Length: 385
Image 1 (cartoon, one colour):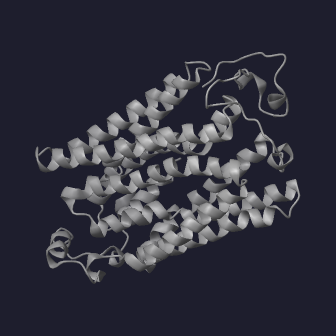
Image 2 (cartoon, helix red, strand yellow; image 1 turned 30 degrees about the vertical axis):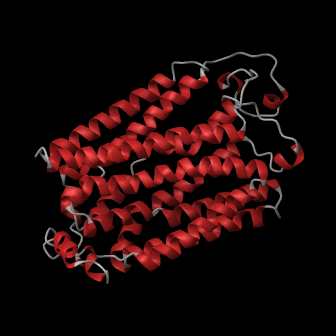
Image 3 (spheres, helix red, strand yellow; image 1 turned 135 degrees about the vertical axis):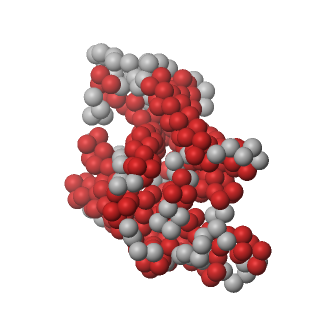
């Protein structure tokens, strides 16, 4: 996304970095609120002088456990209960996240990297079940005429979480130190787990305060089936053309979203030279636009199906195609604007926001093609990264 520059002399900031110099934008002072990273307490900020390889291994380690746990996580939710599985996942993740700074502060650099990688793999393992299990819940809870909106709300929540968390984390790192980020996010995760376990139920029939009207509306479309009691027809799933079409669409969308969510803050900080607080704020821009587009696409999709009587299949194809094409072309355009930081942020924001449109496309389609096994088919699709 940046132009190649052969620079002979670089700032002290870049001299201390091991990033390949040919892929880094030249150092230029930036006026205004967005500024180059300057640390008053340099010794504290470089407590762990990890190179790019180590940081890449730490970031990537999460996806090892995350990928492994997709299908087993969906199966666990179906067998032991979706809410129970999610509660354990969020609480254990929060606990491990809070534990990270307590341990690595006692370790030397090399050992700290190894421990961090191990914990990241473990956290990924715990969180691998989350999206498949949530999708399994929609198989029990979502009325067909409200499916797009409900699924879009779920995915928009993830975008809102990113948009809120990035600026908070940037402020915490600057004011209270990097350790506070782990304590804060860990505590939020554990509190959410407690609320989830107390207020949520696997099926409408288990909810003690649901109205009879709502219960009838939901269960009348389910033909009396429950996710937990279905035998998994592996042969039919593996030979289903619609399932494989959705899996391929997921693979196209997942690659961009995971790369951007993992590396965009580091990219803005280390390649474009925004300070960590500014990079966090700018990363929040696309993260905030994504849920807006996600929610809008859900509303439009349900309107087209419910009010305009458009075929559900047609709506799913429109949302999938438009979301993927606009998101992909925006990333490509960001690679042709050199080191123009505002344009890079604009195109990345546009890409991430339109990726949210796919939530009303192939992502919602899981519940329609396999309502009792939507979590499992979603897990299979999530493996494509």
